[in-house]
Structure formats: structure tokens, C-alpha cells
Amino acid sequence: MTEKRIFTTPKIRKFARELGADLTKITGSERKGRIVEEDVKKYIKENLSTNNFKKKKIETLVEEYNHGEFGDIEIKDIPRVKKIALLHLSKSWSNIPHVTHHDEIDVTELEDFRKSLKDSYTGEKIKITPLVFIILALTKALKDYPNFNSSLDTENNKVIYKKYFHVGIAVDTPHGLMVPKIRNAEKKNINDLGKELKNISEDCKNLKVKKKEFYGGSMTISSLGSIGGSFFTPIINYPEVAILGVGKAEVKQKFIKEKLEKRTILPISLSYDHRIIDGAEGARFCNHLRESLGKDFAYNLAV
Image (cartoon, rainbow, N blue to C red):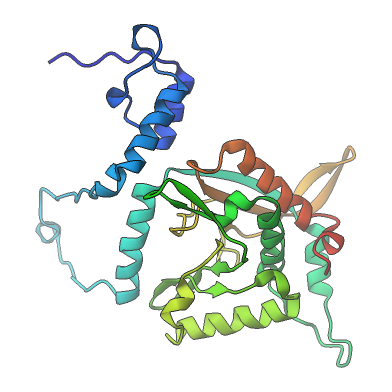
């Protein structure tokens, strides 16, 4: 059986690959069956409307040899929380065409301010995590870029735009990863957010979070700042369409007005659903975050 020849450009091949479209199954509308962008979009739309993507099953890889043949092993049950996450993450990764945009934000002034915070009565230092400011910046960006605060209804070919701002926070616990929501984050100040972050973290570790608190989010933040690391590819928390990964801030030498200066640089990784968000919008969203958390953060975030 001869393999079907595909007539298209490298740009269209990349476009189809990012969307998970099989070019061998697409009929080109141009001369000699040449495939153009509209053909790929039509194929994606038809597959979504017929729900073909949902019918795909995740293939299970079978080992040719048993692990025990090579040495001692120990078999344990997957913890309940991780078992739930396993199914959820597999569904997200296999159904959503992920694109991840990596960027850096200069947070020097913000970090200086954060570390200088003191109680006006006692003079004691106030500990506020950088995540608080990132939440404020994210909600501000969501207001200006509503595509990031949406969900796709593939059954009816609709986009659901959310008018609320409930930010999911990935919490690392002994039981596994949990993602509770901070409701109406845009209405809270840095002290309120700081207290709520502490409370939901404790509730997750003690398994005191209600099931409903893991649903109804706008967008999720996954922060590795307290552990370490820089860029990574966070998996979108379905049915959301984007997730912000945050690494650990580091002091680096940067050229500022032709002079080398020590600046505190925060690495971020933004994963988004390419069916609703394109690369240009992803870049603009990151630029918005950079501006909100940059030199004029106090004015931009109304801190």
C-alpha cells in the first residue's frame, strides 16, 4: 500500500502538529489537493463537533519484561489523590493542544518592597509570599485578556467566558497535588490573599477541603518558587484553557542603560490551549504580567 503524499507548506505542517491534526486524513482544497490553513481548521472543527477527539483512548504501554526479573521491587497502591490527578491530567494532556511560552520578569523592586514590609505597630517583619502579587497580576491580566478566563464547550462549539476571577493554586501535599480555588481574587488585598493562601494550604494537607473547591476556576498557578527550578511545562487544569507556571527567582546580571546591574529575575512558563489562544496573544499576556510585576508594580497592582 502506497503512503498518501501530502502537499502543503512547513508552516501548515507545524500548525497541524500543534493542533493534533492528522494531515493524512485531511483533503486539501487547493490545486492538486494542496492543504491550506482553512482545511486544517475545518478538520479540527468537524472532529470536535462529532466528538471524535473525546472517543480517543489513552494507549497503555506494556512492558516486554517484568520489573522483578532485574532485581528486588516493591509494589504499592497509587494514593487516592494521585489516582484522581492521574486520570485528570491524562485527559488534559491528550485532549488539549498545549503550547508553552517561557519568559522572564524583572521583579527587583517588588522583591525589595516585599522584604521591607513591617507591622506599623510592632515593627515586626510581615511575611508575604511572592505568590500574592502574582495572583493580583494574573487577575488583572485575565480582565484584559478574557480568552484566558474561558472554557470550551466542544459539544456545542461554543466558548464560555467567565465573569468571575477564581484563581486555582497548586498545593503540594503528602497526599499528592491539590488545586483549590481562591474565589473572587480580584477583590482581595495582599493581607487577605496571604492569609487565605496559608489557610487553604493547611486545609489541603489536613484533607479538609470540600470537593466543590477544586472546581469552577478561571486559571491556575503552579509555583515551584519555594522548591527551586526555572522553566517547565505545566499541564492545563481542564476545563480551564491556561495555566501559569512560576519558577524560583534568582539574582542575575543584566544590562540596564549600558551598565551591568544585579536584578532579581522571575522565570515563568505559560501553557495555553492553542484552539482558543494563539501565540501572539500568549506573548501579550506575558508582557502584561511583566508590566504588572515590574518597576511600577505598586501603581499597576494598587498595592
